[in-house]
Amino acid sequence: MKKLLMLIFLPAALSVNAQKWAKNFDFVDQCICGLALASKDHKYGYVDNGGNIIVPLVYDEGLSFKDGYTAVRKGSNWQYIDSTGKAITEAIFADAQSFQNGFAAVMENELYGYINTSGKVVIGFKFTNARAFGEGLAPVANKKGDWGYINEKGEMVITPEYDFADSFANGEARVIKGDKVLYIDKNNKVLHE
Image (cartoon, rainbow, N blue to C red; front, side, top):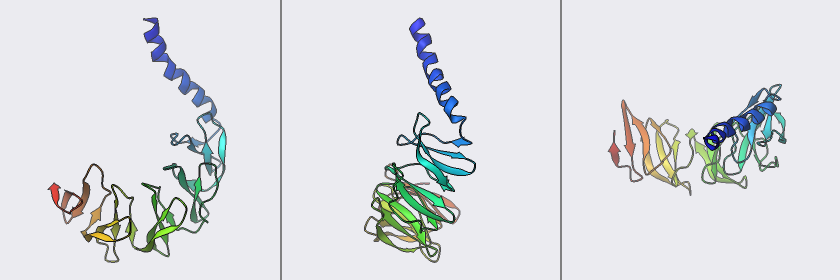
């Protein structure tokens, strides 16, 4: 019975230690990739699971780390940094999303494109909206606001015909057309409603 009690109380002891250092910040997010977004006095940076500041709290906003990189905002523009705080892009993006499968959707001049983890633009800025890649395809919206899917080369593989489209997961993606919520496969075949 004692072993069982120790197992029950061990996580509580760990959370108490985390709570002690977390009180040094106004906000601490979940630790992802070994780092957690933290803020103090309306400035954001990243701490490790021991509460040590790894990326200084100098940003106006930040996203969670994904694929070893994250987007941070200084003023009105976003840039990407690695887990040491080193910039991989300049702060030039009006909007920035988390990396997914080596790509991140970014906005310049009111249009979205995609960069890779080196910070290089790999799919040009030609979409009015964009979401993360999932299973090799990404949902994007054209100038009419219709959603379709591109592949990792930026080629349209599912013609824009939806009012909204979500990323693929487990071989299907949720799309909205009119008043219907549908789930399609990568061949644009409706699997179920």
